[in-house]
Image 1: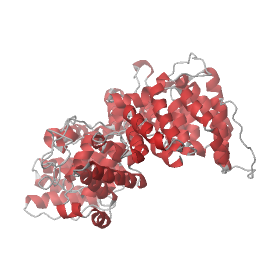
Image 2: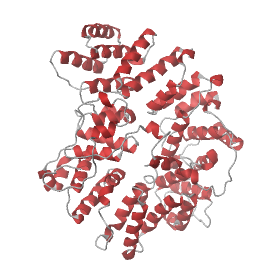
Image 3: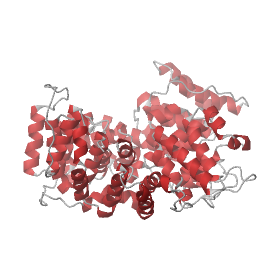
Length: 606
């Protein structure tokens, strides 16, 4: 069961035509190209030309939504994902009246000094809630603190939520800002967001306004934007002059900008030679670089995904000149970040060019590809060209197995959903019932999953995975924390087989928190010291104080600060116990079910 819990327990809640002249395929999409899918909700759709056209394929309607928006307004599926825990019955804790706080009510020292330490939240549940808190704020003119707003915007930018940072900046009356550093940063966010959305006309308009106001932006971003805009306006002589002044003023020459600028100048003279950018490390300039590359139809490399995957995945996906494996890698990341639909991802997978010889010799082809991204696309196309159901099922099972090994099983399940619809549970394929059932559960098709489970159970009544699959279905249908408690109670004997003292201590804390009756655990220990570090005494006392005072937002933020970018099972047991109690108080335990599921996923106990 260890294998299954890591695959499914979070996927459940946080969620074609090639070779058409040779064989008949399963048709999955109609009417739209990849670009139309990806840019359907993009304001700059008309500015991006000559994008990917899928030969002989039709695409269903689908959108890309930035992950930033997922926290405020999402599809029904993602609303279920983040709000499902609102229906949890808090078994032992009555609903309490919490003190209403805004983000601006937090202690000044904590706000400025400690929120900055929150950088890499391991919990997806806490990360989403943190983004929602930072984004969903009202700016009250009577108690407005531009210093605090600055830190909020800065934190959103640091964690990749550029659109949310931009939305907050647009709410501000910048005429009232006295600190020049704050004002400069707000304009920096605004300019970079316009670059990221590829709204170059607005970029150049804003640039002109900022030059008039003598705004200072890091890394000479404003001066470079001015030069870039002049080249777009074909004012090459003026652009050369300003660039020569830039070279004189820079302490260290920005070689990447110079490469891009020189390419644009030489291109106008009929010379087109580009050697690529080197060591892109500066997030301050990466949106400028991406816009300059896109306007010149030059490739974006993997550095763009590494530096800012949330905001630059879509430009990489849409870049025809970028290597296909990099585009697919960006698309896979965007899908897991809820920024790309499965239909858009499948369209990209379809666009990879494989020939009939490669399809005729799958094993040789897979061995020769030597690239996980291309193999994912190959398996998808291969499964769609299979005529006979048994051959199609064989390919899909191999596809899922490969995807599990590289951590992309959620994509493999989702992208083959319509192919799975062609299978019916019969005695001929009953031996694969559990594999298919888990795929259907991942796709939230619980009724069909039950049919496959029932078929499999006839000949395999004692299979351990049966109970786990039933638990996942029951949990989704009942939306109740009691389901988790019952499952842990029924399977508690498995815990006695665990030898890892660190893991056992975390389990003991969780079991006590859930008040699981008749749970006896061997508490023998060999380690008398614990390397897991506790937060400071004062921080612990502050958390306890705010729990007693029912200060809702302070409970969340202080607890998050105390975790200091650790995962659940990296917490000291006493700290773990405190955090569970704290989040059970926050919003009357609204996050607890998803938190417990995350903990179980980390523990891998079933």
